[in-house]
Length: 216
Image (spheres, helix red, strand yellow):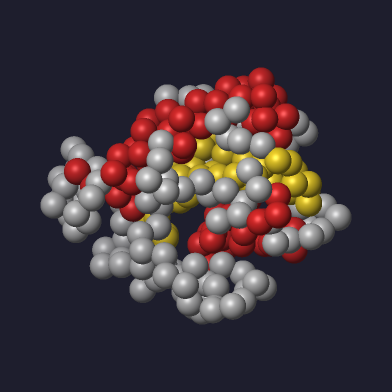
């Protein structure tokens, strides 16, 4: 299996790359700064490029079976601007499967099923900017013909992997507040809880679903 990882130099993206390589997969990482890629492996291809440049994305998707995106918002519109570029490249390459990391804010509200969490009183965040950006990307995937899943965790602190978590479709598990990224301080080897869930979702494809995952 050949996986394209976007956001491969980020906190979650680095763990996705490491996990996939340990699992024996071929990995391509599309990054702006190759020097930031910490992994070195014969099955890892690092391609320098920009997710906002269609030719870079098309090149990076060559020979790819599945895309896993850990792109975050970082106060920009890169996520929503790059999504249609990625969708088009996947169409051209005949790639169907994509898994992305979203945010719990774009899950369905339990208190008001007609809106998303960030649009309701259920969300306690003062700023909705990041959720709005994720919502735009979600809408683009939703209107595509791709086989997509968005994994939507809430607070992602560093910490030990607990090995216990809950998963629910479209809504936040009741009482869910956080899920550990599973990375102890100064560690580059411990696999991530959220990454484990991402990889499970990849192994068991589902069409047009959002999953949230929380520690008890």
